[in-house]
Image (cartoon, rainbow, N blue to C red; front, side, top):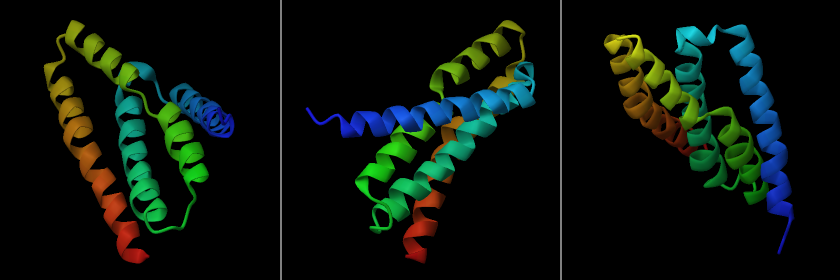
Length: 123
């Protein structure tokens, strides 16, 4: 078994988790906007990395593992998003639930596609 990919993902994941933690210390978690912003930024960056840069041969498979799977995988989280929605539901904040579902479920993939296309065109 080649341990190199595991080490790349683990190192990237450690950095992504620390970055996420720092953002959540800066922005109040009870606002729930930090999670949405992090997930949208992560979607755009992953689209850029995987779509344009990796497909265009600008970054290697190893760098995609480190930055994409590791760093961005730990930086963005579905579990925190799900918890945010549960707490919003518990607080009867249905408008905020709608915003988060649409932004994360629709805008996130759109941003990933935009990042992919922008870097594909530029290369």
